[in-house]
Length: 242
Image 1 (cartoon, rainbow, N blue to C red):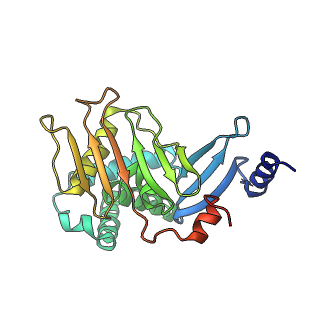
Image 2: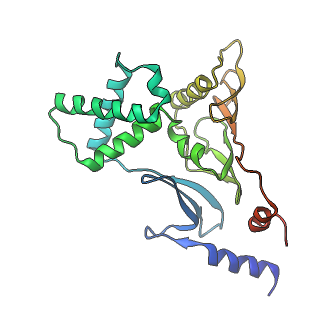
Image 3: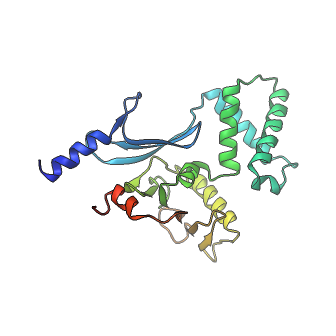
């Protein structure tokens, strides 16, 4: 059997078919019980896609979540210290939800409540749509090249992959860029539209504003592995042979 056939056979063995009917080479939790990631394989082209999976919201839940976010943004009792403590923030969010639901005389199922907590923590403490990418220990680089462009990641086992994460508007992209800049503790402006800084996790961030980028704001985040690769890792990844 030639090398190409061996590689194809190995791919077929490693590919998992999820109940949804989608074909995955890998599927693993990143922020359970709600945040998962899959390396999806296009059955026609054979190309891989880094795909994030988060809780789905129905129309009513989306409306309630938007109300919660607006309430939080307008709150005067949310201190900056909460933004650095997930446990205290979760307690604060629980209390705030009770106030909002009582005000609107709504009873919310526990499942919906847990999903709201997930998204509120993701968007107020984390990195929004790229939060799973930031939390995934297999990701080394995250690159956004503007609006309506898939974010690319560098996966430690699958190398460069497009993702299903896309910023559909300049406003949404600018929001995450502002969040990244804030977390570096630096400033960016039209006069100084390029920034390089360090995020609280120790990751390096490079940001450019749309004043010098045709496709809008861009950013790259370089993550560093807490533990260097060993020779066993490189063999398992297929980078070197035994």
